Image 1: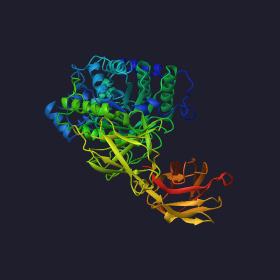
Image 2: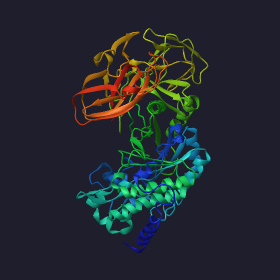
Image 3: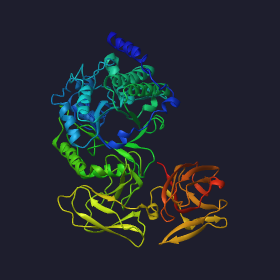
Image 4: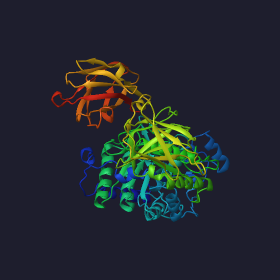
Length: 630
């Protein structure tokens, strides 16, 4: 290592001695779990923007992984690089850094665009896998102040974004930058530098850029870079890409303790997001890349997606999504207790192509009209309904083409207003909200279309569902329409649980009753188990579990005689859940009752029984489901 890099390493070591800081949080999971995982501002904000932007934006070819793929012999990027710039040994990735001058970058213009797009939090990719830091760093010479733009990109954006009233975020992908041997194999973003062009690593400054150093030194650098950004810019959210699981738990804990203590001292509510549970779920929010859940979750989560169908960074042939695709995705995510972090792709000079600006501003136009159904909302009892089903939940779910018959639900935090959002323009005529049950005695309630003066009349169907009379909707078509429902006595219709994805339904009709009183009855065409007064009664089901894994227990229960509790048992495992008091025996409440683990697929006997015989109150059961957790 040369003298300058030795100095950097010494500075990093000195910085690390202050990495935890003073405060209530200690560097252990038990202490860190006391920190609130998802603050209210995050759950209220729903929509944020960040940007993949760095020296990899200069070639504008392939993807943001160009720094890696240019070194993979025979790859399209490698062939393009040789034809355009020459041999990677002579024109390495480092040569793009002085070309990354960002001459049109204006932090205030970026922040203004983000605000007009409707974002409530925003920030840069502070460091991607390429090892180039977009902040004023004393820990690495490869930073945007000493090289390239010669400006503190992160610092300028922090001031501009906060000046617009948005929360400031920083995202980090540098865990993957480590070039080291793992299980006998070279791994990391630049493994093909080592495999195909090893002579490049003989220059210590380049070796540092490509993460080629003892792994213990890299881990210190990983942690110290985070501490430097925390102390300089106090981000409200720190987002991580993959490979955080390669960082030892002790160092993860020290980072979190420093971040949480720093925030506590500033009276700041912060959070950390990770993928694939690279840190415990008890201290971080789960993030899904280009994906989302296919069902509603109890815990808040995040999707990171991009404005294009291809690369995360700008390329010359980037295909941009339309406004409707992004808005529909946002509505689906929010209905399931998620938030969306949307990536935009500036050009190397720091300007945004007009087609991206048009989409961002189009999202903002929709949110200015219909945002009350998104911002500050919480999930309803079910997320929605409609013909379009996702093939899977999790990462990389692919394109989903919604229709106006696909409906998503959100509600205000005070639960006084329910929103039904159609993912497209509904046709004039009758629209049945199949998830909503309305009692026969109901006479009140109003339905309005957010942002339109037209009134919507309604009636109750024979099945007890809410049916709207949709007028011809004036004006240009919107990506989605939000209907505001107020003044109703609404609950979930049992039919809404019949076709949930990845779910095993324990239907009343298939229950085996063990006891003297509980029995299956039918009311308005809907079966339920009623007359369960005696605590000695039990219910059994035989179910076929297709896949091993965790299953969420959920159901619809009515307990007009008062709150009680029950326990669901299978294969020596059980979960206890509370059933709240309801206003009527025909008005079930939606209950999320914990999780059961099936170690292997197969046929199981499931039993439902009172949790406490002495405290048992009569219950009507409309539906129970075991929903597999992706």
